[in-house]
Length: 118
Image 1 (cartoon, one colour):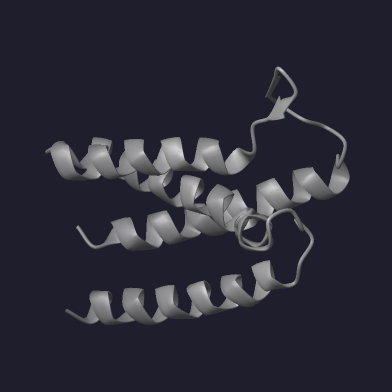
Image 2: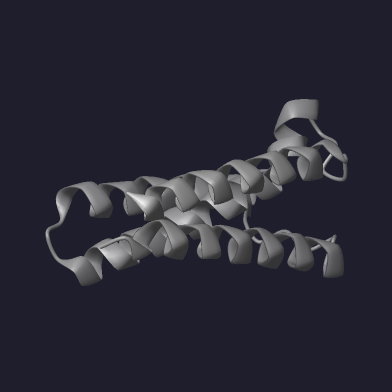
């Protein structure tokens, strides 16, 4: 079924927007801390990407593969939200995040368009 890339891409955008909006509206809120360590949301994104990829590869059920696409897309959005922070070693608000986001979105749209043609 060809809907999975579109589903994953949609969830990617939703995940990015939710993470960025939450961080913008509540900049001092830290969801998980332990012993002075701030667990950034890209870790949750990595877990979701791993779960989504595993479900997409290992499961035969189309409904489970849809769940995998949602996990994969949303997790990728959480990771993308902090890509600038990761690349600059601490500047969450760098414009680099949006430059990379535009490139990723453009590539995804091209790849999904080509995929839908096949």
